[in-house]
Image 1: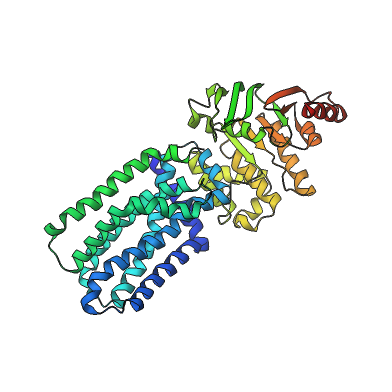
Image 2 (image 1 turned 45 degrees about the vertical axis):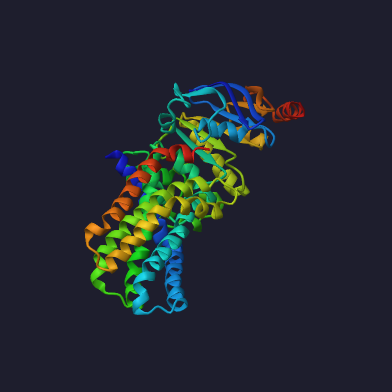
Length: 224
Length: 232
C-alpha cells in the first residue's frame, strides 16, 4: 500500500507539472495530428485502401508522438537537476519507474483520446469499431510507455540522448507495434476474435514480459 | 554519526578518492574545502548514496551506505548548488511531493513549519520558477530538512547567490547547526566555511590532508595551510 502511495506521488508530480505548462502534451498532440493530416493528403486515401493503411498511420502517430513525451520524461528531470532529488528518496526505485510509466501512459492515452475520433472522421471510418480499437490502443500504449520509460532512463545519461531513445526503443517495440497494427486492421475489417487471438496474445504477452523486465531492471539502469 | 573508512572512487583509470578516513560526531558541523576536482562532490554523492564507492564503506548513524542505501537515505538531507526542485510546481506542491516520498507524518503542518523556518511561507503558493536564486536555495533547504534528517550534506550551497542571499543562507545554516544536526558542507569560501564550522578539513589529491577544530584556527592560518596542502 505504501509502495503504491509512492507510485502515485511520482505520477501526480509529473502530471501536475505537465498540467501547469502543457508543453509536452501540446507537442505530442500537434505532432500526432500533423502525421494524420500529412498521411491523409500524401496517400490520397480512398475507401478501398483506407482500411489497409489507416492502422499503420494511426500507430505511427501514436508511437512517434509518444516518443516525444518519453524523451522528455527523464531529460527534464536531469536538466533541472531534480533527478538527484528523486533518486535520493528512500523508496524502492521501481516505484519511481512505475510512477513515471503511469504518467507517460496517461499522456499517450490522452493524445489517443483526441486523435482517434479525428482519424475516424478524417478517414471516414465506421465508429462501430472504436470501442475495441480503444482497448488495443490502451494495451499498446501501456506496453510502449512501459519499455519506453526504461529506455528513457537509460538514454538520459548518454551523450546523444535525444537520438538514442528511438534507436533503442523502436527495435524492441517492433513486436508490439506489429501486433497493435494487425489488431487494429483486423477489428476495422470486422474479423472474428478467434482469428485475431495470436495478435492479442502477442500484445498482452509483450506488455507482461517487458513490464516485468523493466520493473526489475530499473534500479540498475538508473544507477550512475 | 558518520564513519568513513578507506573510501575510494575511480572513474575508469582515474582515481578521484584514494582512501578517505573520516569521523564526524553527532551534532558536529564539518566544512570540507579543496580545489576544483579534488573529489568533494564525489565524496558527498557517495555519502548520499547517489554514487557507488569503488572501495571502502561509510556508516551513517551506524548503517552502511553500501548495504542499506534506502535506510541511509531516510536519515540524510542533501543541499547542493542545484535545488532539486520542480520549477513548475509551487513550494507547497514540491514539499508535498517530497513529504509523501519520505512518509512525513502530519505533512501539511510540517510544510508550514519548514516554510516559515526559511521565510518563504508568504510565497508558498507561487511556482518555484518565479523565485529568485536565493529563495530557491532556501526552499531547497526546506526540502532537505522536511523529513527531519539527522545528517545534512551540503555541496557548495552558496554557489550563485548574491551577498544578501548568502547572508540569509548563513543564518539558516547556523540554525541548522544549532538544531543539533550533523552537517558536512563543501565550499570554496574558506572564510565562510571556517565561520560556520566546528571542524574544517582539506580534501586534496583524493585524501584528507588536514583537519582541525575551527575554534582557534585563524582565517590567515587556514589560508596558509590550504595553500600548502593544495600545492602538494
